[in-house]
Length: 122
Image (cartoon, rainbow, N blue to C red; front, side, top):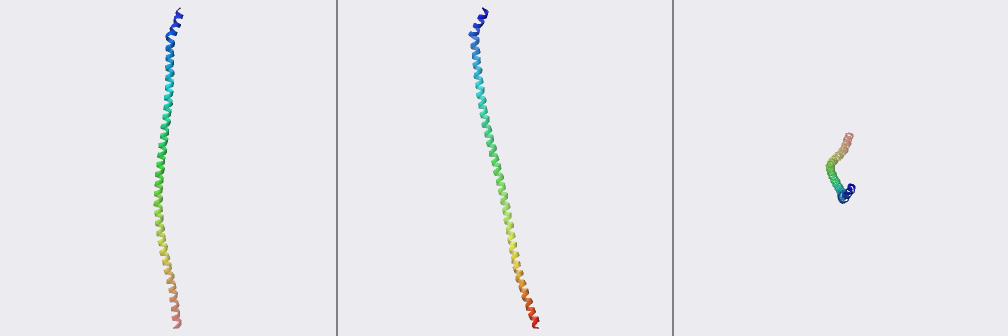
């Protein structure tokens, strides 16, 4: 009979306790899976936020680089325009001097002709 009493004990006490423990373990497993899934979602959201911040930082760096390039281009354009103006002024001076030289050459020829005429008349 002790075997029969052991089975009765199992039926009366141990099996319900084992059932409760099993149900508790299943509940804990499900709870842990939910927490792990939630942690993964939070990690994905944090990763996305980090990626967004990286993209924003990269955009800010690109904007800063674009601004620096624009400023550098502006400085070079200013220097170019200044050099161009100086060259145009020099060209105008050269043209003025060439015109003066042409007038002087014509005047020299005129004076030479006058001199030849005076010598020829003498």
